[in-house]
Length: 379
Image (tube, rainbow, N blue to C red; front, top):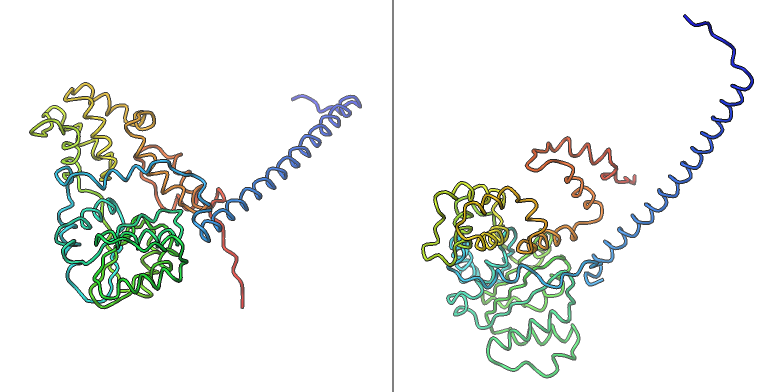
């Protein structure tokens, strides 16, 4: 066993020098960490303020602006190309034309809500039951006065009447008065598509009076709080649409992929592939339609179908036929508050089709600092 030796002065000086260098390095790292923490605090404050501004004025925190809404085209798809819509459409039509005479709000959420609302709104039975109707797209960045102008203009045009010349000059209070005067003896139906913010209801609840004539309002929204706000002043029915069942989704895929085939039938050798592709779409109609559109360019070539199936993730990221899916997902992402965006992005570290336990996920978010304890104030 080697004998311990007292370090020489030179060795002591060397060690001391190295320790001093380490201390200086650590001191520099500490200062850099403090600088990073300060920058992160600034970024967090900015994100919080952006969310607060969006809540106060949806037209001012809207950082990402889409030039084209990929969901618009689904409203005008022919009935023959749709699947699984008959039952909810018939139910909704019945609810609109019958029921209580008080003003009733129907809130549509879930998958395919705008498509369903459009098909019901244009239904001949519905059109015949109402004296006037209006379709207004609200969007995330709506402005109250412009929304009211569009609403009143639609009511006049539905009856082939000319709106008053002063419609472009009157303020919100005058709008309310003119609208109530115009609608007091009419049974109306109004659709407000894509309402994001619960404050939207404050802009219209007094405009659309309850004249006890069975008036109906349809709101499509992804925000459950919108429906909650409506309950304060109106009878409301909430209808959440579910993803397509597997068989209906596969029927939709075949109709789209073989749209130019008179029989619209999938060849036997591609049926297993089509079933797996549909499972990946998880019942989302727009995703199914987009994938079907891409498959329609492949014909019935099973080799190309297999190639697409094997490169599904790569095709999703790079194929222009599938960009609409990513745009729609981005709408939901950008609508999240800042503290949930990090939680959502953290899911990217898990493998595809991986089952995540909620408890583990919550602990991960807490450990990463994504979830923080709220301050409690004692009275």
